Length: 540
Image: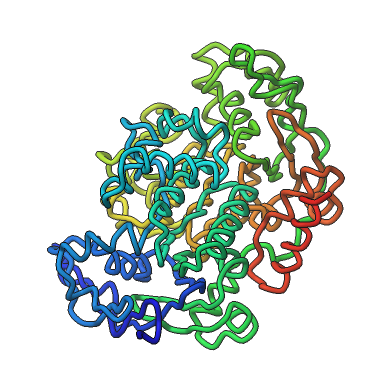
């Protein structure tokens, strides 16, 4: 009998690249027991996902190469297993769910068929497989599961797609479930529901759960033990409480110091007159009211956060303000003039003052343009801002302003990390010297230390240049640290708004209270208290 359900011993993985050898994993060892949740904590490039891919035999070789180690599952070394043995184990006894369910669900097949396919691939009859798929869809909380069997992935929300991935992974009741960033970019309430669901399923089946994450709050909420990875090595391990209260390694301490939600809240002071006045703003799609009579103000140099779950109307406000969509009613007065009545030519001029940073810089930066071209494109469109002879120097200034190097101007987006790409997107927004930047989930998918750096950068720009921000986010700790005032949205309506301190310390609405209770804290003791509060609110 093996000592542990899964044991990784001295695993090393490297990749052959055009720039030489990259050692992604360097001699790591850890174990997972039945019924246990082990978190592998680390930032992008730390090697946590590569080690999980080695367990599932998902590393492309070449360019990847496993140079040392053993991966023992029930005493069997998976690195020596035949392809046939691997096929029998993967999906049946070891399953995996990924960060991006839309990228891993087939867009051309109904979700019911995709879940059932796993069972049929391992010898179950079609009838039995479809019965199991329906049973699991009901178990993971998909509404109208029987009818939803015939729907396609794009017809579900992000949280529902993640639930479908969990159902697919659990078809054959695996002994081990590997969850690779399963809640990144999900709303706080959906994140809490997904983590709770994984915990319930684990209690029912006794499976071991390997949780790969960069989120300290997820570790505090769900892990029994955690290992911390940096540069392909394990630098520290222990229980969440041990790591939080008695971290030994500088990298662990750096991660803890970067965790949001621990700083001083801002005491926003209102200026004489708002630069933006939104009154009765609405958006209807037929009989569906996506936004209902939104009313709020924004002052120069202020950060107004907009929070709420998916479908609450947060991003709709941003799109209507920038005329990316046309409003169904209301006014958006920018410095006294209604944006909604402007002609296309007038809007073109106005966009110099109103800029936007999107959630995914990979999608918002043109992969065929160099960083220099991406940033200087603003001056091509608005040639009166800066003479062409000064473009090179200004691009370099902007790159330095966002913490990058002047030589980065000649590179392309794919040559940067996610955090660096987001900095390029911010530099592009600053090229027009705007008075307002709308950030739509601009830091939600970044590592905790990169996120802290980007937020510090935005705060510095706000204080130094007087830029106002509308900060759309689901990450409440970040909002707590960065915002002056907060709008809370639910199903197209603003249900509460106020100073950040009032919203976080004395919320009036039950919905706001539930959002705050669903948020994750890096302190396991605080998180345990939030869990109790969440359960109390659910029972109320």
